[in-house]
Amino acid sequence: MVFWGSSFLYLTVITGRSWASSGIGLETARVLAFRGVHAIMAVRNTDAGRAVKVAIPEEIPAAKIEVMEIDLSAMASVRKFAAEYKATGLPLNILINNAGVATLDFLLCEDNIELHFATNHLGHFLLTNLLLETMKKASAETHIEGRIMNVSSLAHGIVCHEGIRFDKINVDNKFKYGQSKLANILHGTELSRRLKEEGVLITANSLHPGIIVTKIFRHSKFLSGLFNKIGKFACKSVQQGAATTCYVALHPQVKGVSGKYFADCNLSQSSSLARDPELAKKKLWDFSLNLTAPPTDVYHC
Image (cartoon, rainbow, N blue to C red; front, side, top):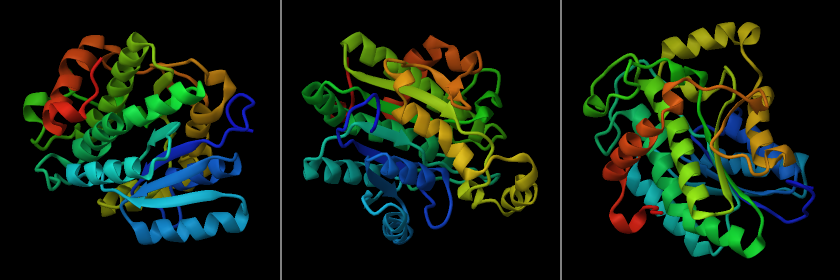
């Protein structure tokens, strides 16, 4: 059974960049497949994704796993994915914005936006907006709550005093990862407010999975080496890390809960900046709209 006693087959999209042998996205897909959810793995590396598509049914014969290509750091790729998904005519009940990148290096994506902000926030912001009508249609037709979750990080508190340097988003600074994770929470909070205002049966939350050794650090040899060495002593396993994502996606106790921040499968307290409605509404949302989408592609209340 999934959610609160329904046998309905849920459609979920899980974004991820590294799927070959580890990662929260992989474990989330495995758990959701075990619970009867039809999982669409939205991945950059489709070869690795296809390997997972073969591996999961070996453990869970009834698993329904599909693979679609997306690069969250490239808006053209996000738009292509959304168009292809909508063309399938499939509903969408759960959207897990999980993909992430972390590096000490300063890199720009193909849209000339700093890589952390582009991948961790903007790509997911655009993807959510483009798929939102599909989710609204599914919730209206089935009367079953849709759920959107942004995988953030405890690092959302490691930012400059204003939280996000909107006027210097493409300037190298030590807070680039933290501000992208802060953006994840602010996005979820403002999206939740808008959905509630419209009376839509969809929740939006964010979460901290824990400190986990995954391939998120692949762009930095130093960080990758450091976390591989200390991981077995100080970090959660991938299974433990995916637990909160799966809890927020499926558990009956989370029904109707929206605009919140979770950690360790419980409600948690985010930073004061992450709870700033003006930062979420008047700054980040409008800033993200301007960077990502023409008026016809965005979500308006």
